[in-house]
Image (cartoon, rainbow, N blue to C red; front, side, top):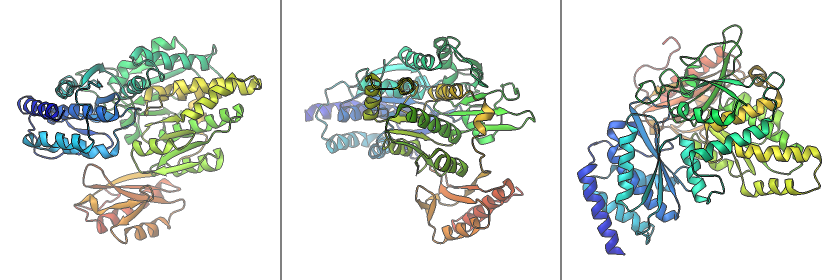
Length: 554
C-alpha cells in the first residue's frame, strides 16, 4: 500500500510540473469563499484542488464537490471551493491543507501530499471516489475545470462533470449522492422538479391573492442564474411569471457588470436593463446564484431594497405562523451577523418573538449555528441564506401528518410545511430556491412588496473602509461586535456611539485586504453619517491608518 501511495504521488508531481507548474510567486489563502483571484493565476491551484478533493473524499468515504466560480466578482476573476458531503463548505481544519497545498513549490508537492496521507492515515488509496465538478459561465471556467478534472484523475478519483451549474445546484447534487437520493435526484431535472412541484402544490390554482400579483422582474446578472431560471420557468407552468433581464451569458463581458445582487445591495439602486415601473416587484441574483435581493421603485421614484434581513424576517415570521397552526412543538430560531440592521433584530425579538443568535461574518458560521435549532433560518444582509431542518424535526412533521388525530387546520398547515421544506434548498443559500420561498409567502399573505416592507422600518446605516498598514492589528470578540485590539479603541467607539440616539457601530478587519470595515447605524441618516466618520477617524488614528483619514467631505 505504501509503495502504491509513493508511486501515485510521483505521478501527481510529474504531471503537475509538466502541465500545471506553479508560476505565481505570491501566496493565496483559502477562506469562506474558497480561493478567488484573477483567473489567469489559478490553473495550478485548480489542479491541486482536484488532488485535495480526492483525498478528502477518501477520508470522508463520501462524494465531494468542487465548484469553480468567483460569484459576484468581475468576469476576469475566478475561484474554486470544495463542497463537503452534506453540502457544507469545506471543514475549517482542511482550509489550512488547501492553503498549504496551493502555495507549496512544485518540488515540495509530493511531500505535502504524503504528509496529509500520513496525518489522516489514508489506507484506501486505490478507491475511486466520485468528485462532482461544476462551473459558472465565465470564459475561463472550462480550462480551469479541466485542471480540476486532471487533478482528480491523477489522484485516482472519478470526476463527474456537471458542466455549467449554479453553486447551490452543485451543493444539492453532492447531498443527493451522499444520501442515496433520499434528498432528491442528483440531476438538474431532479432539482427543478423538486422545487417546482412543491411550489405548485403550495400555490394551488389561484395564482394571485389579495394584493399579490404573480409576476416578478428577474435580474440574472448575465450569469448562470439567468441561464438556469429559463428551465425553472418551464416547470412553473405559469404559476409564477418571471420576466427575465440581464441574461447575456458566456463571453459578453457583462457578468455582474452594473447588475446582480451585490451591485444592488452595494449601490442601493436599480441594475441596468430593468424597467423602473413604480411598485413592481423586482429581484436580482449574483453571478453564481447563491445571493438574492428584492427591491422596488415607489411612486416618487424612490428606491426601496428588501435585503437578506428582510427576507429572513419574512421567512421566520411565516414559519412561526405555520408551526403554531400545526400544533407541533419545534424550536425555531434565526441567525444573523453584526451587519444585520438593528431594526430587524428588534422586530424579530420583540414582535415575532423568535430567538435570535449573532455569529461572525461568513455563511459557514451562520449555517453551523442554524443547525442547533429544530428549524434554523439564517441570512446575511447580502442576501445569502436559507432554512435548515433537523432530521428529527422532519420526521416529527411527516409523522404528525400521517396521524388521524389532527384538526383540518393542523392537517393543512402540516402538509403546507412538508411542501415548503421541498421548496427550500437546505444545503446552502440558493437564490432561485429563496425566490420561490419568498413568492410563496407573499402569495399566502396576499401582500405586495410595499406591505412586506411595512413590517418594520430600517435604521439608517453606513459602511466605510479605512485603509491601514496591517489589518491584523484589529482583533474582535462577541461575534465581531466588540474590538479587543488595539487597546482603547473599543472605549473610544463606545463614547462616540453614546452621543447618537439608537446608535450602534462596530469595526472588523477585511479578510482579503489591509482595510478595516466600519459599520454604523443611528436614528437619522445625518447622525448615522456622523457616527460612521467619527469612528472611521478613530480607527485611522489608533489602528495605523494610511493616507487621509475618512471625511464626509470626500
